[in-house]
Image 1 (cartoon, rainbow, N blue to C red):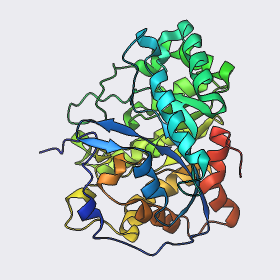
Image 2: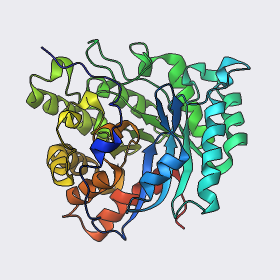
Image 3: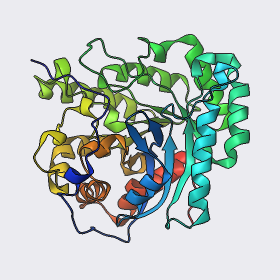
Image 4: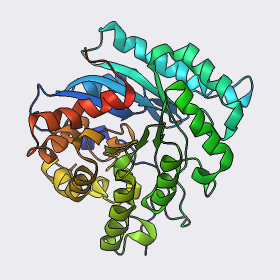
Length: 344
């Protein structure tokens, strides 16, 4: 029977505490370009929870908040509801900017959830977001991950098929260039041709592909991962030919990728994580180069499978053979360029 993926695994603090490690290369600066904050029924990850992870040993200097439909406005026109999430993230950023909670400047960049299918009606929403977040607004992401199998799930929302090719959506993406905003895309490897077509059609928009490019390891793909990796590699090679595309290396704790670390008696160690993700890491770096790759935490989604300090140790093991310049790109430099963050 095929494994069915769920959006994310519940966080079990007592279980996570069973695996702890000394911090590798503790002075290496890190920009975490992908995390969320939320307060949902049965799940809460707010600024103090984030700082508990940021202060667990690694030298995280800045983070980027990624939309997840948190704190949408209950009142007003529906197209302006995502402005509430930007207000929420910008308020969290004020905690970081104070310096009272640690050295990291949390939410130094904000990737918002403005509805790109608004097309020509998108501009007033982006203007409202810019007024709210100021210089912190750096990009937009919409839910676009779609798969024909109901066994492949990674979101509480269900976007329609072919959204990346929708004419209004594409007009919305084109408008991002006028605002100097990037486009984050979380899509499955089965959609990479659509991602390629969109990125090629909008060369003035920086496209950031999340979570290794979404190599699905559940549902109908679980039985033959060799074929999945081959298909994924082909799609990623096409994307790498476009200079406006970057890729985030992470998301290995998303159940749809199929690793299942949460089912083990103890959480994985960094050596185990690095071994599990080595193929995806090597292919991405070979295709895009370190200057277009960046490590990401995807917390708290991935926290159901491993802890923050173990995750970044795993990334450091994956990059052990990289030069100083390549490590700088992977851990901070690419993220700074992608989201226009100024080094402190």
